[in-house]
Length: 504
Image (cartoon, rainbow, N blue to C red; front, top):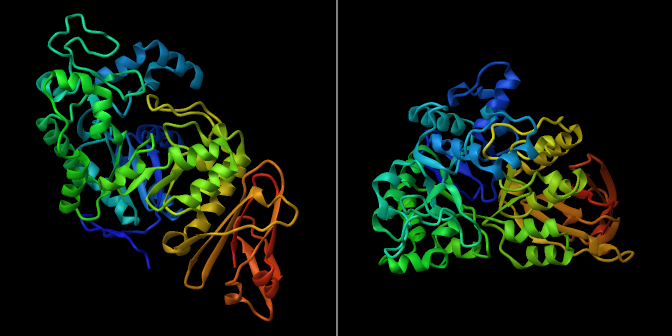
């Protein structure tokens, strides 16, 4: 019943449902955490106990994204230790940190070989097979905009990078350029990322090189999360680097790199998944370039953070959410509990995000109620206790979501009618596949909300004029008159930030 991509280049064929779930792990910090858990050194992919992979799969995840598996060079860590701003940030998020805690950014890659601390390339293939054997797909990173400043490409292929124009004179502006004139990586709205060198995607040889990296990813994984994917769009390249490109003799290409790359890789590896980190309202354009899923930060995430219910409702009702990746935290954002201001609102945001069409995206530690930020440059976050209430909530939520109805069912918006004028506080929608139905109701506000929801299909499971409705989050069972539910509606009242997932 799963409408899906079928990954045929895996050892074990894995079927991906239409609305999948993804679990993100920051690889080396996770191994550090496992070493503490098991009381022994776990530094290689081969050291990871199979029980850990089974546990992830048993929670219902379809994709395991291991962030930071590729090779880094010494320049990244050296850069991080020397950067005053980063040191201040380390002091803030991890008081008492040591140099051993600094591991370098996983987005300053020197080459697409497995990080030597994790093993060798054969180990990556073995790990992928292990992940597949548990019914999950294996996803890795592609960083298409830049590489580490100590990548061998930097010293060998000057023209494959954005660089100074002929009239520039040394010393070049150190805020934007390396000593050799190659530009540091950046986007049009930020300062430079001075541990990286900026690819020139308008250079044909660079396109060939990036395709080679992408082929490595497609040979050793089932999909890629493409970092800042929109930066390769021709109009964004022009916006960021147009002056340098024109002066150095480069012209706007006739085709978009992503359009060529996605179609080529999918022809070679049917079912291979492309997920884009994308912002600035460019999400829908990435679909046309061959991406399967797009970050839903500018849309749903920002709306939930903002908290305006009209904005949230308008976004959900007026957009196709199936190709979107919904999250309440990831490695680039604050932990959900910190961002949303507490456990209850973070939980409400999770129910909204994960019961909508599209991909459900959970970051490791989220289900434990972690609030302390894990910087990508560090191997650990500040210690904090696991929050049992959050763990219990996610156990119930994930169990409910791990059902065919949420993976391949039909989603529809549901109107909430007024009982006392507070119905505007409630968000509601339902899923249906066969006779399985779920009604999701979320009070995304700080006061009680009430209303009526008419359920014309409630009679399908009714018996003797009544219907039993089970809340899969609380376990409560409600016995209601089915004629009343069908005609005047089910009365729902929820306290601040509370939710129902009702099986009826």
